[in-house]
Image (cartoon, rainbow, N blue to C red; front, side, top):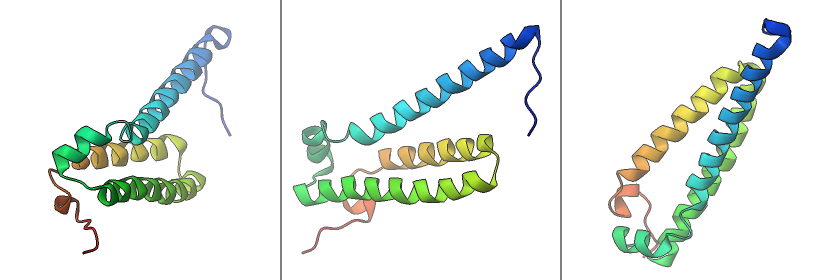
Length: 116
């Protein structure tokens, strides 16, 4: 495995490493915030989307299942692809799903329905 070439006795390599670590920490922080901020916003979200407790719980559960499935899929991809490509694909998928979630105006538009 080859290391990136650096100049100035490794200072450029250390700056790049610090940049990558900072970027990954920011991505991770946003991912956790995106997932966990739904719970404290229960009242306004359920009023806006007309959700009952079961429907709100279904959304939380679907989020956790998607996280688990995504972790397995992206873990397998990380074993086969370059790390940079896997991270870029993960951020792209996460952004697309977050954008699509913002378009939902009611629970039926999510295609999830509570049992009658």
